Image 1 (cartoon, helix red, strand yellow):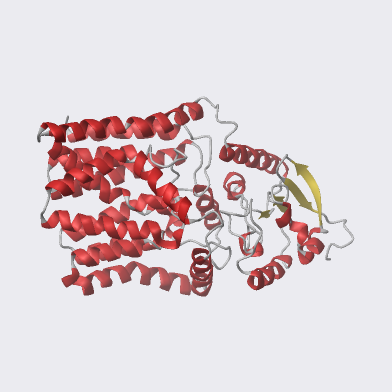
Image 2 (image 1 turned 90 degrees about the horizontal axis):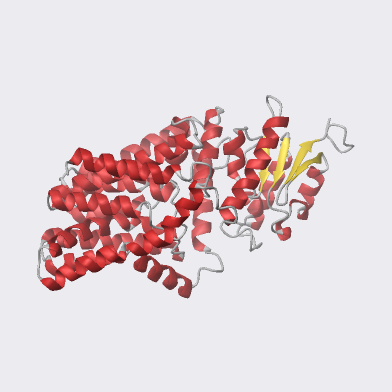
Length: 477
């Protein structure tokens, strides 16, 4: 098969799978799409709206017009194709053409059948993969300035880009000054731009202060046993890669094998950082294992009978993720995913968004209590103040606010609530109070008073929509 035919078939498969869920927005991607919409309204990250992630995810979506539906899934497929293309080039430079095809195929497969949810939205951990691979490729080609530049871009997608920098530094330690210079260039551009917009201080507060607090305090469910369970589960679903890597490092005793071992080891540290072992964190490890496994499986396929048996086992191991996740694509394509928790919340947000689009007026603004950024993505409404969800107002991160109520930042969140009460959004979407009454909006005295200026206008089983009430006695003149 020619390279052109291979990538055409790969793109067609990925696109078909992505189109199966074009009717939904998934957690993680919706936050960055919502932020992108605020950029399109002329607002500035960090200064005009809270955004606790580095800027490039939202900026990328803003450049695309903050799409939903099939245009978003088309972009997903193109991004996956780009990742597979770089994996192909890197593996070809390292080993050869056959290994390159195997690396691209394995990468494309596991970017479609990877996580326990089966559907992988393109959010910072996924965005990181492309500059991650580009940095490693440039490091192999002895281009430290370019490698550092791609590490810097990776860092502006996800702070774990620093682990990519560590890999490149280990690979080309004699060129560390040039590597660091390359890393500094995109970050300096970002810092100067944010400073010129009056957003640099807020950037450090939201991304790094809040981010460090979040990293130091994992959810109650993040125990050693849970981390071990997730790690073993990931290994089981990626047995094909594990078997290929075993063959590779069993056979190879070369400098290249040592470099790939360093890459995989540092990527494991990235997965473990913060102690959460979230499923999406394992995406950082995927490129290193896919490249090594491709070489190992190609070699084993022409080795002795025992190694060919390993290749056969690796092929059969692909059945596990296909059987686990493949039916989910079918259910999505046929609209039979109605009882999935993510689909239930997305459907609720769509109902709220449809109602808001039918009742809002030009210039109306929105605030969401809870973590429902998909409402912003669907309605494309502007925020009324710095805060547009409840995380910095309660101090409870979105990954636990449906089950926990302990604030990570009680004093800081109290100040933030006072800031919120100075704003006057036209609409308030309360998507949390009915799901976790301990974090209900009226549990906070200052917000209870503020809420008197609003009246319920629409309700779903999980959400209450409030409209600004101009005839209410407490409404400020």
